Length: 196
Image (tube, rainbow, N blue to C red; front, side, top):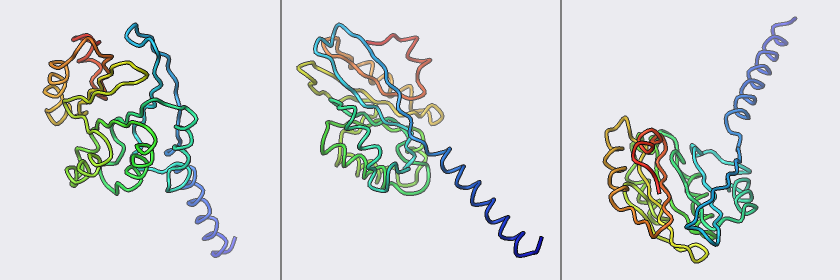
């Protein structure tokens, strides 16, 4: 085999490996759950989106994920942690959040990747212009006539903030609402306290 043919083969293999890694690492996955509660007589459809890591789905306009959300016909959309990565841009995540907040009530609770960014506060300010940012607090809404409170706590176990924010959420629980807590990585702590 000539040197030129070997070089082309190596380049082709590298490109194939990169294509496979890209397809494997950025695949959108949809999972559905049915949750019953006596506090929700009329029912409610929630789309929960997390771990986007500023990737795009269906083009840089996020049309792939936006179309999937529309198919689900949610009453509300909740963004969980890691919509952006610890490094890189925020444009794709903000594009998705803006597009969906124009159609649905949206709420956002950040994760550990947001906290590792150098521009965390700047990103949070941009998010606050789009939807409520929940960090140790809540936002109230009414869905199909049902009172709902959505709480958020950062996934910041390693940063020493998590317990404080969880305690702040629990301190304001109101049993007359259907309460939702978005706190990735906090399941062991929650099981000790009980949930609403």
